[in-house]
Length: 414
Image 1: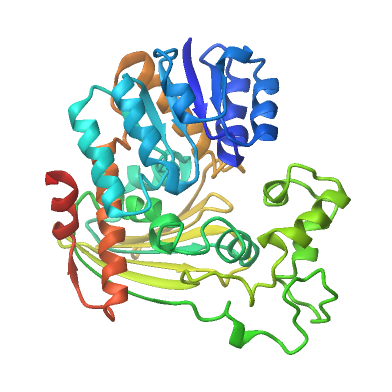
Image 2: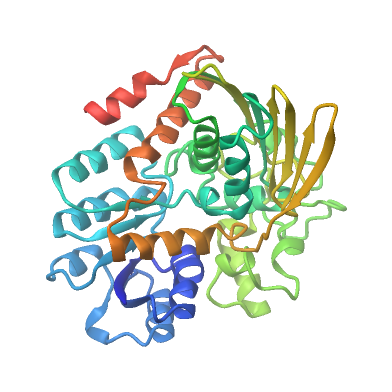
């Protein structure tokens, strides 16, 4: 059995990774936690029955100790990835690192430079690769089931309430303290396109705007906070509709540790989660597209949009002898072989990123047991980040083509 310390006991650390650990005590055990929030820290320590000597309020306190576990899971907010990752490498811990690697180019470069000097194994949480849905599609493409792949169209349906929660009111709403939208939300979609294309990207163009969630779009009746008697009828983004129902799972569980009705009302009165979506301090895109040409000649498009009902990914793949259409939300993969037949494949999908959270934890444990490299190593995951930085540069510069090698070289060569 392998041991781990979880750095960051919020939604991902406590729920996604923490729950896996509790369900698989024969594989892995959490022996410590690092979390500045005392309520979250105590919650994790209690759930995992931790010795009080292994419960830390800061990374400085934790890393002052000798190495105490096989690995760490870094599930802190994006802007707090760099320091714990570098310190963990210096201490010799293996690492599961939440995506993105870091919110900016400088941070990615610093982590990769430390990695080259150390002996740590690092798996990046590009969970989509570990879903049965995308693994099945990869298997079909590798077998040339639809002939030679010519192009891919991937659409990330962020979902209207998910976008409002995370990117208008939440931690990823502003590039002053978070990554650009296409990196924060879609680096693992870019990773999927890279993986399915079996080639590094050559050129990228991108366009995107913050089209809707801004002050000039606010209805006349809107208040700065939804709970202040907002009279806008049928607003799908109304914080009262999203957070004050009987349901208290995600995303409601994120806004406060007190999930009583009174506690949630207090959160809407005092935190950004109660802000009207037209009066927040958000500046990230709500609709963005990227066009990618790969070194092997394949082409792909990625659309990331807030304006969908479902939270899912939809994919079309065009081959010389057939096409594939898939919808992640129901696990359905539809295959058309030109002039011959249509086939429908159903794969298992679950709530935890369609099984990706469990899949990546299984791979993490295997890496610790066998030292076998996972599919999303740090080096391999750098490609999607170089693609994201290229896309953002293109977007800022009115969609001009950007050679991905520019950012790839900066990261890999320093």
